[in-house]
Amino acid sequence: MAIDFATFNSVVTHVIDAGFPVLIRGRHGIGKSEVVYQFAKERNLPVVERRASQMTEGDLMGLPSIDGESTRWNAPDWLKEACDHGVILFLDEVDRATMEVRQGIFELTDSRKLNGWHLHPQTRIFAAVNGGEHAGASSYQVGEMDPAELDRWTVFDVEPTVSDWLNWANGKVAGLVWDFVNQNHAHLEHVPDSGGYEPNKVYPSRRSWVRFSDTVDKANLLAEPKQNLASIYNLGAAFIGFEAAVGFRDFAENYERIVTIEDIIDHGKIEMTTDFGINDHLALVEKLEASEMLVTPLATTQIQNLADWFVTLPSEVAMKLFAHIGSNADNFNVIALHSAVATSGQKVIDFIVEIVG
Image (tube, rainbow, N blue to C red; front, side):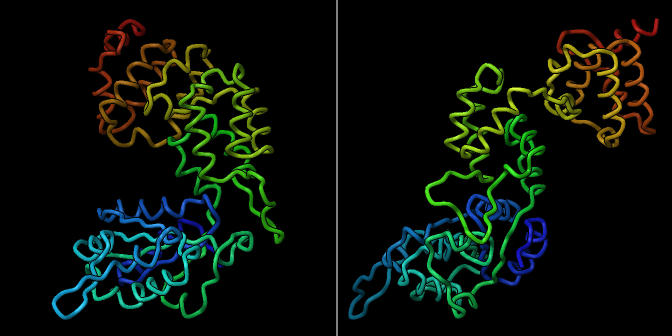
């Protein structure tokens, strides 16, 4: 049975602590590699990645040399690093490798050594494949892994949720892209039925959405999306396929960005409130009150963003916001705001005196 990434992350640490190799099976573009790199970051270990599908037997086993009357194997660079230091050894596309390479990996996962070279005690092995028991697995041109081969791995079939991606992508993709996927879950990726994928057709994936977002964002096409609909559609068709591109183009044509409290406090996008009326500002203050952002002291940059926003507010809204900030018993944020100076040069304390007096 497939599990989501939240469940995977909660249990895989036990397998890794025990020193056993982990095989992640799932559709393309769902974030299998990303989760490995995130795990390595949390463990403060470097990643040594090799695509098994591109390896020859010599790439895996190394090359022999004559040492007196005997022959010894010289380890390839990646193996020597995994033996000399603790690393995350990540073998991608194992089920696309040749049988000779997979036989060598068999020894590596079974006994943590290869041709006499022993892995470092802190080295941990991950692998990722597209085969498995998930929807669409039959569409991939991969080799079957027999029971003896799978028995050397701890096998996880991963089926991430939409929330997995939305939580990860928040702040990593353009706001318009994130909002579209948040409101149109079916377009995040194509989950095939028993018939698999249609050959030669471009489908959206979690990975292709990120690449599409990076491209249109760097091209500045989303600053004025209504003026760039043709380019947005053509790039979308190339990255995420026809159906998703049509949906995104129509969404962009009618898009009005909802301003969040994170836009203001975390990212300082005060310009997004330029056309706000009193009710709009009040709604944003209510969002801040509903959040728990002010329970702990804000960072210096957050205080600066708060000050920049504060001095633009109508007087009644500003006082409501100031009263909420001061409602915390510790008063750490109200003290910081009280002494802050907005980027415009206006002191917050002077602004408060002005609206009170």
